[in-house]
Image (cartoon, rainbow, N blue to C red):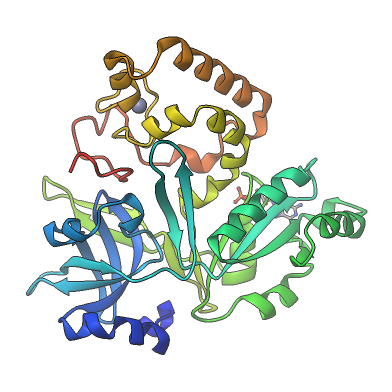
Length: 360
Ligand code: GDP
Ligand code: ZN
């Protein structure tokens, strides 16, 4: 594997030139292991890269920290498969989640995705509004958006549905697919699946994202590359790679955060009305904080200090619970179950995924 296989090109090399002069080497983030700690691909193979003190000196906001897909500059430590991460190159595209509040906080979910496929299942009553929300997210990201209406084999008016959707999203390609009959796959692969191009698939659980990745991009099981590192006790642990090269040469970013994009729209209404609470929640130590008795919970801290009125938090809770109950299909996407975060097991250890760095 060379870095070109990961999408490195002359334009990037030009941007990177000053960092190369400063003794750094280019790499692409393939996985975030835990806070400030990443698996990155360099020309000479994979290394574990850490954001050290020098990095914090420059990066002040959470969106300045690396995300899966980012191009970064690292300096290897002699002899070890380890490196210090010094710089993140400007992103061509980025998916982020944002909280409006006193200050805008942006959390990068994935970077440098060229094409994002918004997948819906033709077997379900799907929601045109949700498709439009996806497209807003895609537009903001800068990535090319493509709508896939999958499972055409279980729908006898697929073309009618396609036309209906097409009217809603003028200018955006809308394709019918079936991973079962392989309808539409060949043409799609020819247009979008190319070596060095970075793809992502978003959409509700069960619509066929994994099947499409396998059928469209890989034509065999997605290589489940693993990242190995030693934990604090010296034991080897493995983590799933979140950016992988398919046999076709295309790159696929598949992270819980990207799959979770589906939930944003659903919660937007509630979250917008409670922007203050959302901003607080972003400062909680754990991304899946339930704001009850988790360590480092910013919401509980604000309740204690009086910065947040208990009644307001209660109504937020109630409204949110109602929303979840009203959308049973989205209640528990499987990808969420594997999301790293706070639980009894890692209590007291460092959180996996940073959110906000005010405590550094
Ligand atoms: P994901 O949760 O979006 O990754 O969805 P999966 O790829 O795991 O697919 C969910 C289910 O739908 C699986 O049982 C698949 O076999 C099935 N499936 C995927 N694509 C198709 C399709 O084109 N037609 C039909 N009938 N079933 C499909
Ligand atoms: Zn909390």
